[in-house]
Image (cartoon, rainbow over all chains, first blue to last red):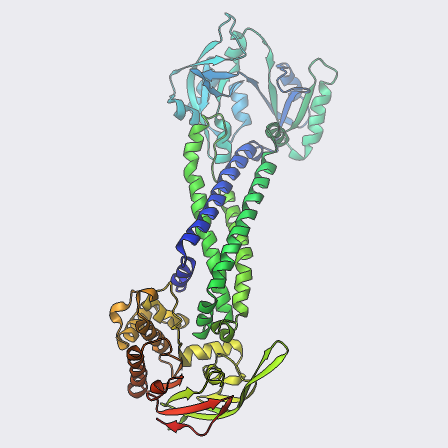
Length: 387
Length: 229
């Protein structure tokens, strides 16, 4: 701490240059925070995946429905301890821009399958008992001002009722949430009771979208998947079963390899920062050679002067990195609001902060070491005489 | 008077590319404790080189330098740095203050190497600034001070850790006559009233009059014995 004023003075010796350098670091880390949040959001499905859950979909396309009757047959496969299912409803609320996922599910089976979702006991019971019942994710409820006890009018893009109308109405009986921010993104949905939905829909009765299968031993995931698919081989509705994580990754990759894209952008950004900041640091130290010589004259050892130069680079990165990451965090509420809930919630998690700290440390070392070593080798007499 | 600095047979050779330049040729000199010595001589005579050796900024090629019974020519780089911090104060022609720091912070710099708490460092820096008559300029940056004031801040920095020896390289070389006299009177006061041993390089015979003794160098050798001012 005693050297902080000295470091600070050295860093802001040329204010404009340092502020511009700092700004470039702030922008780089803000970009890092935002892009990491996007990547984490895209991978949240995979991160939140349970190794003991399998997904069974139609073999050739996820949008092909599967018979509800498959449920009992899947349950009989050795190693399977639970089966739930869900069907895509395709909903919008009030207007086209308010779109969100709605799944028709067996309430008890589905909520048992996802213990990471939190819901009040009485609301869960009400959902199971109410044929027209629906539960909604807390973020969605907050966004639209929904509350338990109200009617929930939503339109389906793909499922008309028996009377031909696309307008459905459900009773909102519960709110679901999750403690883990990565899981919370998966609660941005509405669950409706399949009992009412299957009875009231015009087409596709007796069918569902996909099955979620709980197994006893995650190491058996491959063989159980194979057993399930074998069961329905050569039937009109062949299946494809895979671990939930693989399914989530594959689904995310349909949009693009976000992880690789983010990594490439960030490599370009930090490489540029490395060159810019490295050049600035080197220039700054070059200009201060006589000052460093004076410090040595006063009794600062070679090691101490080296450490001071390195600490200056670290301080620059700590300042810029913290401000940049802070800016990314500050931008999250606005960004989450602007996605209209159609995108998993963006957040800067502890892993992203740790990664940012590691990047800052590496960048500080790379840009700080060459001038620090130069300062270390500095000979007082030569530096003071201008050689 | 006890001898503070004892120089015996000191030589200094610089290698400039392929050329070997011998700057000092076997210097012998004793500087008693409490002395004020002016090192004089033409450019290239080796006076600054000798001063740097006395101050521990450089090491001789041959011979020995003993300061307060310690062979400083045998100290390692780290030991020499610690020795300078504890025993020597430096004053340069161009002041060499850190431009980004206030006068107070500049004076505090040598104390950063001690275990003194911040409040004590501030107090001692204040005392040093008061001694050189600049207590009201403590918050000023070097660019906000005149040349004479800058040099007085440099002197405050040199004395703040209470060193035995003050090493001054052309301390008045960048100042007008009146300001130079002020600075020299200050050095004289530190020598006479505070017992500091001062070794000063100067071209200026007027400046040398403030010293107790004058030592002349020419082409790396002392010309005659030290002369009383």
